Image (cartoon, rainbow over all chains, first blue to last red; front, side, top):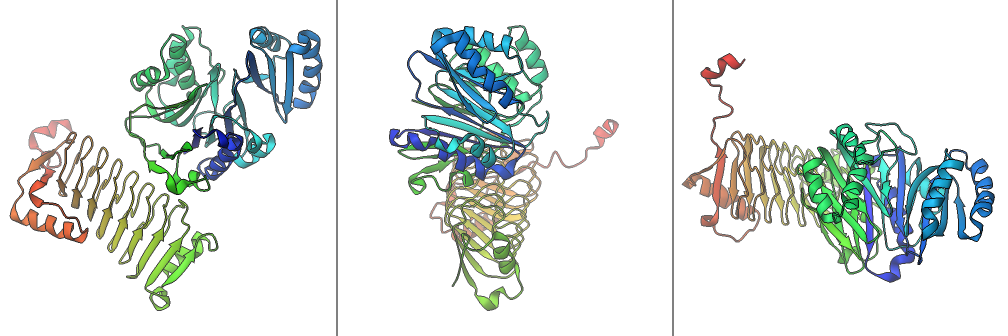
Length: 298
Length: 227
């Protein structure tokens, strides 16, 4: 099962409601899989700033010292915003690589969930509604977002096993389905120096796309190539800095519905995900074709 | 006319009422408001009541229907009227995957498009789709009629048994053992009846008929060594 949702805003006026829309959409999908849930929010990027979202299993201990140590090592260049088990550290773009290295050395237990100019990822074990409450997702604003509620099949129910997965700056993926050649692909990707954190199949799909995008392909080309290289069942939603991509496998067992009107494009595993969105009666509602790449970009 | 608002009544209560033996005594006309994409709506009915659903539904709307006539004023999710026995289901919008799957009888009319696996394993249901249908329609279809006014996707009628398929538009490809067949007077009569039922104003001459080549499901003696 698993439930996936995405929303791409065309109307700037709605940006302050992005998190509220996504929470509402994903909460409705909870009965497709209540094991864990995650939200990827693309906010308006700040000039020359980057963000790192980290997760800790002992946030009280880690985050209290993290704030102080960041101050000591990076002066005014790094800021931290803590939220339950997650913290978003923002810094000057030039400092980001240094900061990431520093984090892995000083706080090896912290898990880096995302990096980039606009992306923040929040994911934990629990239902979509509970996780939205934990991180106050409903108050977050931005231009587009994707989310996932998981019924674990091939790997453990852990925070790291939750979607969205991110293996490159401002890029992430959610997946409904299962891949059958992920172990082979993981090995092949490692020869390119692409490292997966988990045993999860969906992370491999994300790493695969990162590798393609990193070697110069655009998202459309990478997804077209994925149709040849990824074996299994999938409906993917991929978030990038500029928008959202969607791909279903040629058999298209895993559901997807799109609702599009003048203000937004909403994507969900079921129609139910759209109920309550503004002007739904004015939206064109359709099912994406199998083996067809869809892109919505700003 | 009895009206039930799913914002005020639970799905379970609604289905229990519609399935109850005394439903005809309460009313033969029912209207359901605010379906909001919920699953298994108006399933397992057995009395000849008319049910109008004002909006879109989720999985398995009208499943196992017997005698009742359902009209959905919206689109339906996967598996609409799965295993329908008799009666009718009319969808004014589109239908998702495996519409009318395993249906034994009755009629399913889809005014919009149907996606993949429409009429999979159909066993006697008649399905009329006014728009296009996706891939693998009528896969392993055993009996009944699938009428498509638009185009059909890949591998139409794969491993088909004795169902009839009528397509007015283009067929992307035929599945294993599915072939085009001659449209004889008895087929035209069946098609005419179904088009009339759906109030579809199109010419019978524009349709082509597809069915089983009967090569796949008959055992061939020469293959005995393979077993």
